[in-house]
Image (cartoon, rainbow, N blue to C red; front, side, top):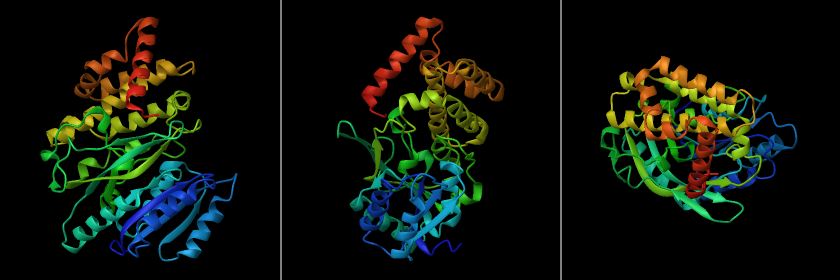
Length: 347
C-alpha cells in the first residue's frame, strides 16, 4: 500500500445493496468534484439476491482511478470494513454504509482540511465531523454535532476536550481516522456480527494522539427501514450480538490503568456505560428465553474483569435505572427507554 497515494479512502460495505448503493457512491464522487485524490472502495460482501457486485464493477470501469470494486465471501459488515481498510491507499480512511450518503459541500471542506494537514506535514490522527439522522417516515432531519464537547478548527489532544453528552457519542459516521492508526493496532471486529461500528468507534481512540473537529454536517444517516439493524425490534432479536460486541469493548482495556488521559477515560467509560445500558434494555425487550440471564452474565463478567469499570457502569444512575428489580421495574426500564428514544430520535 502506498499510504499517500490518495488523501482519503472511503469504504462502502455492500450486501444486496443494488437498490440504493448508487446514491452513496455518487454522493462521494460528485460531492468531491471527482477529485483525483479520493478513492471509493466498494466491498461486495457476498451478495446473493441482486447484482451488487456488477454495479460495483461498472463504477470501477467508469472511474478506474477513483473506484475499486472488491468481492468477498460473506463475512459481515465488520469484515467488509476491514477489507476496505486493507485495500485503502489514502492517508485517511472513512466508511459510508451503502444506504447512507455524504453532503458534497461538507466533503469538500473535509478534503481541503486533510490536504492542508498533508501539505504542512501536520499529523492529525482523527478528524471528527457531524452527522445527520435522515428519518424516512417523517422526512425530518436531526443533526448531531460536537460543538460543546470539542473546540473547533484547532489541533486538539484528549486533554483539551470537554465532556461529551450522552447524545454525542463518536460514532462511525463522525470519524475520519488516519489510516495508519487503524492498521497499526488493528480493529477486532468479529465476522457475521452486527453493531461492530461500536468497536470501530471505541478501540482505536487511545491510539489517536491528536484530533481535530471540523464543524460540518457530512454524513447523512438513513433511518426508518423495518429491517435496519438499529430498528428496536431488530436490536432486541439480536441481543446476543449486542452482548458480544459489548464484551469485546470491555476486553479492549482496563480503562483506569490503560488510558492515561482522564478526559478520554471518562468518555470511554461513558460509552461503555451506554453499551451496558443498551444490553440491559434490549435483554428486557427481547423475546429470547435466555436474554436476561445472558445479560446478567455480562454484568458479572464486567465485575470480575474490572471492579472499578463495573462500579462506574452499574452503580451510576443509568446502571440503576436499566436494572430495576421485579417485573414492574422491567416495565419501567422499557418505558423510560421509549421516552428517551422518542426525544433523541435515534431509531
